[in-house]
Image 1: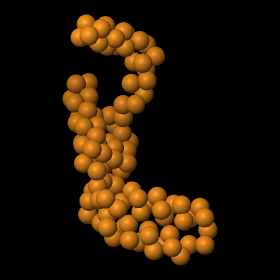
Image 2: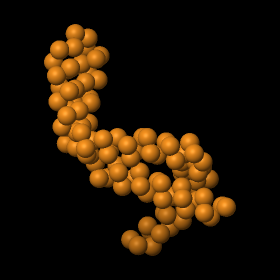
Image 3: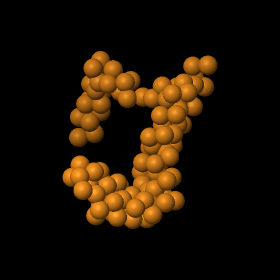
Image 4: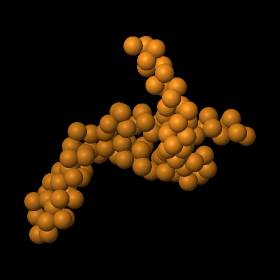
Amino acid sequence: MKERLRRAADRAARNPVLRQSARSLKPGTGIWGILGVLLFFIAPEIAAFLWGPEISFWAHTHYLTSPERIARLNYWLIEKLFEDGGSWINLGIGVALLGWIVWERRRTH
């Protein structure tokens, strides 16, 4: 079983399509890559930890009073995203991506 898993990992590592896909997922090491990670991973989670219940309550009240269906669906989604507070997993992914960016910058410069 262990050898079979190792062979599969080796095949995946040599697969050029998979390697290109992994490269395309990596954020850039410039200012836009750093800002992207901060704005799309870290900032929403910090906001959710600090103001999750308030944001959820605000979205719920707008969900109840909005006349348009698409707006109600958006408010429902916001309520569900923030009702449990922040996600340590997403925050950890954001911090890991920032660490990856810093490591890449130090390695190439």
